[in-house]
Image (cartoon, rainbow, N blue to C red; front, side):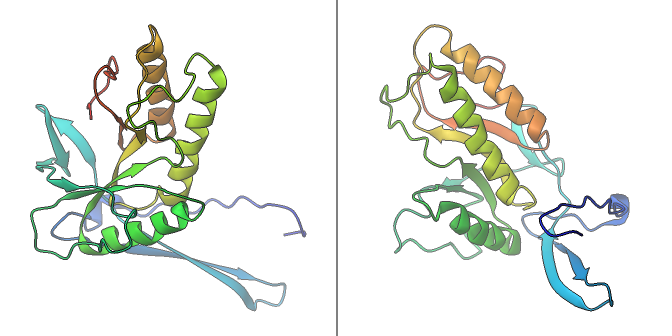
Length: 219
């Protein structure tokens, strides 16, 4: 590969029908290893990516993992307070919220997502730097806000999208978009995120009047 250039490589997909599924009680993981070799065949760089096979869905108004109903008892603010530690199984929690404060949030997200993969915990991953605290902090009439919000969610998808524990993308924390027409704009944002990643659910961490028309789930 010439310096400063990129090369796209197609990797054959494994036969998922014979794979062991990732689940809360059996968090089976696989590893993809990519070796970069120089002209002589010497490995000069190695990248490893772990992943799992699982299906997230909603059936008869209930959240499901691999077609099985799961009650989402959950916890929040995992990364805000350094004294808050990741839970150890067994316990009633099934899902945790990833909150991304500060510039190191995505790094923390990768670390915590890896733990969730290991021990079988689901994650609701919240996009960084979009936090309204139930106040009218953002001008949702400005189309740039919607584009920036999408890019933040998209960055999160690119960063931790291969982790099977991630079940839900969260647009932001305690959003308030009460002006007429803003609920439909939020619905359009959901559609963009769902096209980017159709394998997961999309929510916004808010409350009334933040009901999104057509949304599969409401938070």
